[in-house]
Amino acid sequence: MRKDDQIEAIEVDPFADLHSGGQVYTRKIKGFYQRLRLYTGWPLLIGFFFLPWLNWGGRQIVLFDLPARQFHVFGITFWPQDFYLLGWILIIAAISLFAVTAYIGRVWCGYTCPQTVWTSIFMWIEELTEGSRNQRIKLDKAPMSFNKFTRTALKHIGWVGVSFITGATFVGYFTEIDQLIPNFFLGKAGFWPYAWIIFFLLATYINAGWLREMVCTHMCPYARIQGVMFDTNTLVVTYDEARGEPRGARKHKPGTESGGKKTKGDCVDCKMCVQVCPVGIDIRHGLQYQCISCALCIDACNSIMDKMNYERGLIRYTTENAVAGNKVSPLRPRLFIYITAITVLSVMFITTVALRNPLNIDVSRDRSRLYFQTNEGLIENSYTLKVMNMSQQKHNYTVGVEGMKGVKLIGNTTVDVASGEVVEIPVRLQMDPANIKQKSTDVLFTVQETSDPDIKNEHSSRFTGPSWR
Image 1: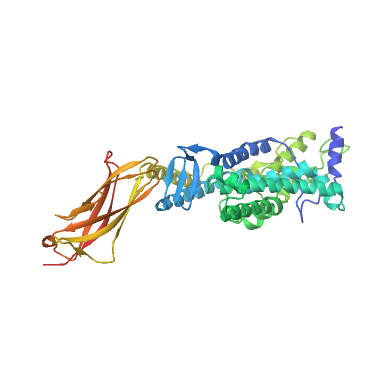
Image 2: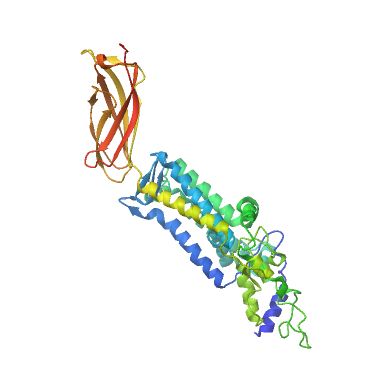
């Protein structure tokens, strides 16, 4: 087929206008940016699906054990007391997203957002079972037949399969996955694993299979707030109106009439940019909040420009200043602020984790009675120490007490605590009533690793007795 015939075939596409309004039928396109999306999407998928199957030190490498209140991540065990670190991570992630958006727009949405990646998988299954864009439109318009039923059923079976794998993998981050999967099929998984797998199966199936672009345009708040992060130097997907207009179809030598005079812009009005857009917009109308910067329209337009022997870049990543012919400033104050904040917070976070005390203790005083007088006439208080080993190794700890002169510690003063274990130690403090000067006195319990004095923690409490003075 000659190039002119190829362009003519695109011009007379009977379904060219069915991309906007109602269901979005996307057209498959190849190009540089789509290969780039594969390089960003596949690591996300591989990491998500295979990470729970890896082990570190005999334990699942990432496991959020909610019943035990332990969160194991790459050999480090976090506890509820460490939740402030999660807030720290979220702040760093948010500022990083602001910085990336201010510089190169919504590339997170177009290249690595789970909604985009999973929707692409569902669209690939759809094309595999129901055919190309025009074939899918014709199939939807056709009455029910064996062919239509079979193709549609295979599509939904594929969607459900991917949704099940997604749901089971997600639950596998909270339950040991090597036990979850066999127990699921043997009917031994329990109510909550079944309930959560079904929930995430349905969520994936509905979001990626049916809602698709509606999640990006109506449900995701990022689409609405992106405008405040953009400026005139932000890279966005842009249609070069000065070069493309007036647009129009043509079959002869590109861009000219029979007299050789150019009367039309470079846009041949093939609507390929509209047909490939996953959110159903026409980028030629200008930047819109629905645009997720996936660059499908760029690859589609470049393919047409190649056929027409035009220069690429009618639709391209560029800035408002570049299009207007103004000076472009890639490095600007807000980026320096973002980068500085990210660097400082990241260093502080890494330092905090590195210096994090792997030993935590808690002391609860027996409140059933203020104090007890022994047969020897000593005043006694009872306590329960909870020693929490947050490291990945077994430790032997020694319990001590400070802050009171003449106090005697009664009970087991040494204890072995396994990795991730919490051990309760009942202890008593005894004191001669002659040394008690007030009804309540501060006392400090200390717990220290027997062979490593750097691993130490302490917790304050109160000693209560009669006041003789």
